[in-house]
Length: 199
Image (cartoon, rainbow, N blue to C red):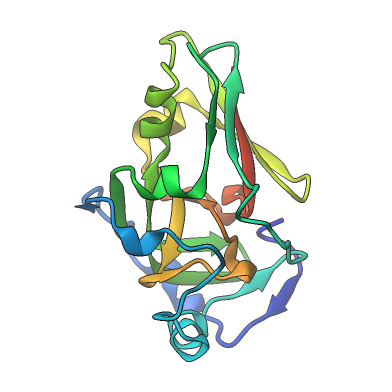
């Protein structure tokens, strides 16, 4: 759950609701070996650095513990040519995008942060996405799921984020991977994702 009960809230940035919609431009980054962590964080990413990077972001939902050694992002469904089982290292080696995007949970909170991750369409293309697909279903390890239509994927920047504000996603923000969807309500920003099904 993304736009549900707020577990922690260091600030309430309601004024962000009046900010203009962000542009479609974003930064493309190459794969970075610093993305390949065995746990949520690294020696370079001290607890203090992670705290400073995320202390103004809200936390929602029940925290999930993930064993990164066994975690896989499964891509499946009738509208792809082949199924995928991607490790964290596989995702880290793919083309990344980086952009400051506002997460809006209407009437609850808004958060502005810089997110970095793999475009969802890039992952689907690797699975040989078929033209006739209509939507994708994204599921979390906590059982929550949501869907994105083909139109949303074609017209919004949607990606599987591995970093926030230049640090590896902390557990409370979806480690090892979460959905970031520009200009789409925060209720669809699935955390702790485990599968993507194409229909």
